[in-house]
Every structure is written in C-alpha cells, then in structure tokens.
Amino acid sequence: MIKKEQLAIILVISLFFFWGLIHNLDPILIKHLRSAFSLTHFQASLVDSAVFAAYFLLAIPAGMIMKKYGYTKGIIIGLLLFATGCFLFIPAANTMSYTFFLGALFVLSCGLTILETAANPYITVIGDPAKATQRLNFAQSFNGLAAFIAPIAGGYLILAEEPKGADELAALSEEARAAYIQAETALVKGPYLMLGLIILFVAILFAFSKLPEVKEKEGAKEVGFWGALKHKNVSWAIVAQFFYVGAQVYVFSFLLVFAADALNMQGQEAKYYAGAAGLAFMLGRFIGSFFMQYIAPYKLLMIYATLAAALTVFVIYGTGMATLYALVAITFLMSIMFPTIFAIGLTGLGPATKSASSLIIMSIVGGALLPMVASKITDYTGNIHLSYFVPLASFIIVLLFAFSNRKVKALPADDDRVN
Image (tube, rainbow, N blue to C red; front, side, top):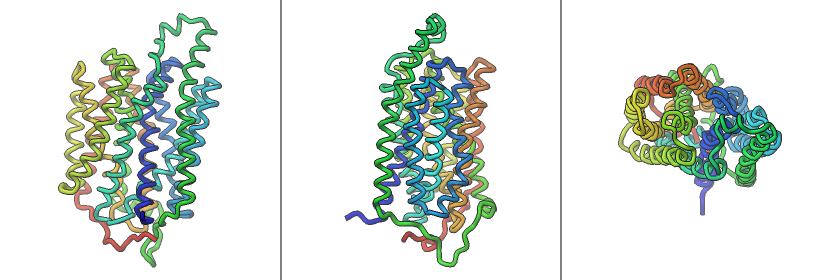
C-alpha cells in the first residue's frame, strides 16, 4: 500500500511534467503565432514575457497562499488557474487576437506560478534534507521528459503544415489572409482544450487525496520575505535564477527560430532538433541526479555552467549545423541548473522556506525580460548569433553562484517534519 508521503511525491512529480509540457509548447507556439500574425522577433518574444511576467507578479501572493492554506490547497488553486488559462485559448483562437493569446498565457502562468511556488519546496521538505537537491533534480527530470515530448507532439498537432512566409501572406487578399489566420489559430484549440481537461482531473485527484502537510519545528517563528533575504544563499539564488531562467527560455523558445534564421531550416525538420533538445534536457536531469550521489551539487553546477558558457561562445562565433548541435548540447548542461539553484537557495532555512521559495520563483521573471533583450539584439543587428551573448552572461553568473555557495549546509533532519 502506498504511504501518504509516497503518494504526495508521485502526485507532485506529475505537476513537474505538466508545467514542463506547457513551457515546452511555447517554442512551437512562438513559431506558429509569429507566422500567423507576421510578428517581429521582439513581438514574438512577448509570448515568453506574458508567461514569465506572471511569475514576478504572482510569486509573493502565491507565498501568502502557501502560508495561509498550506502547500496542497495552494496546488489545487494553481491547477484551477492553469486549466482556466488553457480553456481561454479557445476564445483567443476564435477572435484571432494575438493580445487575447497573451492574456490566456498570462492566466495560465498565474496558475503555474502558484504550482511552482508550492511544488518545488514541497518536494525538498518531504524526506531526508540531505537528499533534497537530489530529490528535486529527480522530480525535475519529469519536467525534462515533457521537454522531449512537447516539441514533437506540439509540432505534429500545431505545425501540421509549414506556415506561409511574409511574402506569401502579403500576396493574399484581405479575405484570404483572414481565413488563413483563422485556420492557423484554430489549430491550437484542440491541444489546449485536452490539456485543460487533464489538469482539471489532476486537481480533483489532489482535492480528494489526503496528502501530508508540512509544519515547521514546534516553537519556530515564521520568517517573512525580508527575513529570508538575509540569508546569503537566498539572495544569490534570486539573482542566479533570474539569469538562468532567462537563458533557458531563450535557448528553448528560439531554437526553432535560430534554425530558420541561421540555417534556413523548415519548421517540420527543425521540430526534431527541438525534440532532441528536450531529450538532452531530460537525460541531463536523470544523469545529474545520479552524479549527485558522488559529486557535491555545487561542484556539478560549476562544471555544467562552465561547459555551457564555452558552447555558447561557439554558438556566437561558429557557423553551420555545428551551432545547432551546440545549442542541443547546451540544453543538456542546463538541465540541473534550475533545481540545483533552487535547492541550494532553500538549504538551511527552516521556517523561512516558504518566503524564500516565493522570492526565488519571483526571479523567474528573467524568462520574460532576457529573451526580449536577446530578441532586440537580433532585430537590431540582423544576426541571431549575437543574441547569445545574453545566455553567455547568464551561465557565468550561475557559475559564480555555485562557487559563492559552496559551503552551504542542510539543516538537521528534525528541523522540518511532515504530518
């Protein structure tokens, strides 16, 4: 019979898969909407901005929800918002409004913000604190599994045919162009409707499952947001996560755009490289979780960040298919960064954990801002290779984070407990 703690881990791991699925549909969505609405690189990057702006605006309210209602009720609230955002894709497609799509993504991402604020710390405090980083990396591995599945499935369902180019669209009559945009936007309705229904079902499972709630050590005083910031590893994690997420989002979201701009590759072919990137990301998580049994997490993070920076330099100055292969390799190296930064940032916090989790989730707004900066570089210079100076700087900051927090230690096992 499954214990409450084991059931909690299984259900929470499913959340990592689902939000990984939605995030890794974004590159498909960006390419699809960019073609349908004839968007610039900067305008297309607003997809990421709509998604990750929610993390900035909702992270602290999400933390307040955790404090008042606990992790499990917070997760249910997040799932309901997640499903609502998925359902809003239907009227967005019917109205053929790019702004409506961005609004639907924002609502969906408000749900994801609450889910991540709850699930990331929840998985770290269920079980042995000494294995919190390894446990979070394992859970995040299913996020990587979604990164592998989403580009291929999304490419098949949403990019069923190669979108028309700007010249082809310009040659169409106004009525034909409107009919084309309607047909293209309608392709997203089925996948997001199905996902919304699945998420509702998961919310019902959480509502009727008696999962353990986490309580701090008896007599411990709850620590607010400013108190959490006093911990060096928290403040460092906020900065590192801001830059890391910005790099991850840009590398994944614009991989198809890079293939088209730098290599003149069609979307139907490029989607397999996006799938390969997702597979590399997934394998990196599982392999990283294994290595953490023998290598300290901060050391592995330093190694991965150094190699990622080196490959990014090659993407900037290299040419040909080798640069696309380098981007795929970078996704492998990025795999352990988010959970490792997150776990190190929460190490040794006790009653400050929920507040610190909100602040670190809030820093995910880097995914909204840095892709915009990188896209502006592409639009201004006409050279997408140069935009990868933004991920390069980000990986250097992650390297500095790992080195600066190499002495952070976990609390004893009885500082947090599950009831």
